[in-house]
Image 1 (cartoon, rainbow, N blue to C red):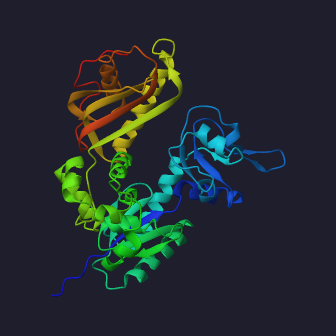
Image 2 (tube, rainbow, N blue to C red):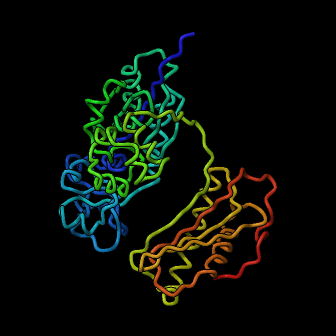
Image 3 (cartoon, rainbow, N blue to C red):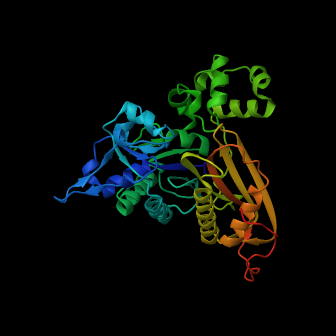
Length: 383
């Protein structure tokens, strides 16, 4: 029996959060729009019934850009940029708060639309998936266009798709013709379409590795493909050097994984201002309770129990510490999680203001049909 050549698609929603917001506020289409920051700046309705929007120039505080429309990106505003820095670049850009409930809703819609056509899916996050098309008889372009049409029909949103023999190349391909792109790569397309790209386009080469490669005179994927193995091994070690060369030649045999158990679930928040452990004790306690309640909801939604509860703190000098407590019995109970988190806090020297607070559940397992009594497992004092 003839073995089909692998065909892997990477489906990536275009400017996903921003596009969801434009469905809700169509009058903002064509304008630079930024999603992110923190605070109450949702659109208001004027006495005349017109929606009024906040702008970047109105923002004061610590916060980062979650995403932006392509018009805002043309002005130099990208995700993870500080909102205050973005305001200096484009003070008149519209600023909207993130609405993750809406984003999760549309995420479910787009994945369901794809699954009706090609159900072998690896979920890679709220706005992207890998799809194995190998078993389908239709041409790759036909399948990809059917997927794009289904996503648009079910959500009103646009996606870009890259199709290639593997996940590594498909991830690159989906970004080549955005927005609303469809790019199909064959092995013979490597030299023309992939090798001229910067090495940072390879998923797995981060900023630090990118900088080290630049220091070696390696700027493009073609440069990397031609690099001496001994040089790469000297600077990156044997394992990573081998992977770099394989990636530069488009080699990747990873399968599409349709199901993977989460290793941990976490919630965290960065505060508008650094909080004092004594003067802001009430605020910190309130945030800790909210995070633990949210973590309990996340565990319940994923039908998981966590046996190890941890906290994460980042201080005003950007030093980060973590502490964990292992329970006798796994839990998804918010009260037990809160007690464990407070126990962890007691093992941290709180001598500086706090910038970030997070809670985490790990050592996950399926829900227990006979949960332990609330409070069982550890002896804890309140923070």
